[in-house]
Length: 149
Figure (cartoon, rainbow, N blue to C red):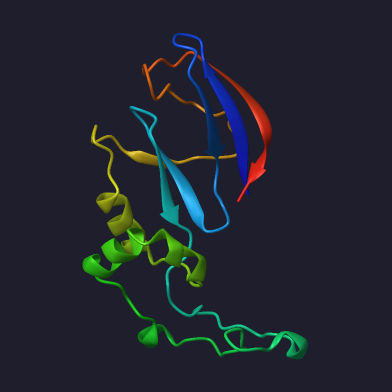
């Protein structure tokens, strides 16, 4: 769960609410240079490669037990399929498997910042490092107001 912060810019008095850290269906990354935030899907849209054992009382349509998937049968995604998935955030909640390393590399190369700097994963343990969306000042007051998905 992400932490929810309210921010107020000391330069222009702009107020905003920011979600900091990973959510239930996404991982959060931040540009090293301009500090812009990006959300990327937590899981790949395929059946979990490790399988799933569902208790009998939970077995219902759409939530079933299944065996592990052999490595050679795991669906791999093309760049076009990844782009399509990135553009459809509603589908992110249905992802069930981990991303392969090459898929993560593809996602990070596709979701690049305009300033062309590297993206790094955010962490709930670190204090948010942000800039004002209106005046680009880094002089922000932040205080925690709760948590979000």
